[in-house]
Image (cartoon, rainbow, N blue to C red; front, side):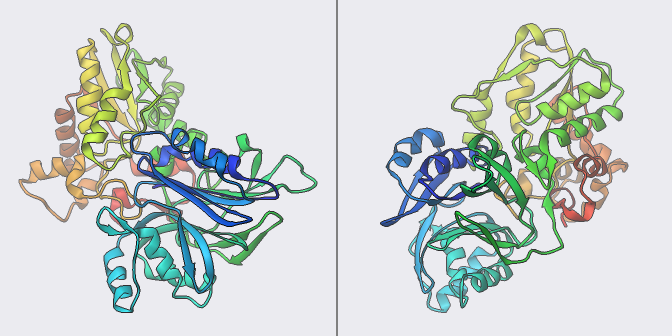
Length: 469
C-alpha cells in the first residue's frame, strides 16, 4: 500500500517531515524518501529500507535538510519522491497505490514521444509514469484529472512546488488521505500537514481537520488549505484497512481501527461455541480482534506468542516469499509455560497464503505442548488478489484457491458457490484449509459481520478481495 506525509509550515519542517514519514513504516518495507523545498530549491533523498528501518536510514539526512515545505513516502513499488522538470515548472512528486494498466499507458506515452529516465527492477518507475500522465494536462489540476481517468487501479499523490503541496486522494477513495492543522498556537496557524495516516498527527502537534473525499484535490500552504477540485460522492474504501493494514491507533473515515477490530472479535465470539482455556491474538494485527473475542466470551486473554519488535516488520508486506518467511520465523517467540497443555482460541486478521501461519505460528504452538488450537480469522477467505494495492499478486498464492484447486482437481474460474458461507462447497473448502493448517478447528468471520463491525454502508466499502467485484 505505502504511505504519504507532507507538511507546509512557517519554519523549518525537516524534523516533523522525518518523524511524520516514519509513522508510516508499517505500510512498506522496500523504499522511502523525502523531498524538501527551501531557499535554494529542492533537496531530496531516497534510500532502500529493505535491510534497515526508516529512522536509521534517514536520521542523518533530515538534519542536513532545511525548508518550509516537504513530502515524504514509504512504498514497496518505486523509489521516490522524484523531482520532475515540466511545463508547469519543477516539482517533487510522491505516489502510493497500484496502476494495473501500467504497461499499456507506458507504450501509449512512448508512442506519443515521451521518454522515461527512472527504472525500477528493469521496469518503468510508476511515479514517473504518473508524472508523465499529469504533464499531459494544460495545468496540474487538469493533468491530475487526466491521470485519474487514464489509470486502472488506485493512486494517491502529493505534488510539491513553490505554490505548496497538492494533495490528491485516489478517485474512489480506496486508500485514505487526511489533512491536519497545528495545535501549537490555536490563534495563529503554524501550518498544515497531510498524511495517509491521521494517527501520525497528535504526537507531532497537529489535529485532524478532515479526510479528503475520493478524487478531491487540495493545495496546502503554511497559511491555508484551498480546495482545487471537489471530491466524488461515490466511494469504495478498502475494508482491509480496518481488518489488517491500519495501525491500531489509525482512524479512517472517522472510524477507529482498534474499535472496529474489537467489534470483529465480538462477532466471532457470538458465532462460536468451542470450549477453550483462553483467547489470544497473533501479534500485532490479530490482537484487537482477540481482545474483542475475550470481551464478548468472558475468556481470559493470554499471550502464548510475543513479538520481538526491533528489526522485524510485518510478514505480509515484503514482496518476496523468502523475506516474508524469514520475518515470520524470527519475529514471534513462544511462551512455553502459557502454551503447554492449553486449549486456545487464536484470532488472526486473515489467512492470505496460509504458509506462515502453518509453518511459523501453529507449529510453534504444537511444538510447545498446545492441547487444542482453534483458529479464528477476522474476515472471510481471501478469494482474489488485490488489484488496487501491492499485496497478493496472483490467485495461486491464496490459501482458498489452493484448497479449491485440490477439491476440484483443477483451477476453476467460477467460484460463486465457495463465496457463500452456508454452502457445502464453502464448508469443504474450510475443512481442507483446516487439515492443511493442522489445527483443531477453523472458523472465519463472514462478510456481513465485517461490514457491521466497520460501520460504513456496504456500498462505500471495497470488498474486491473477497467478492472479486
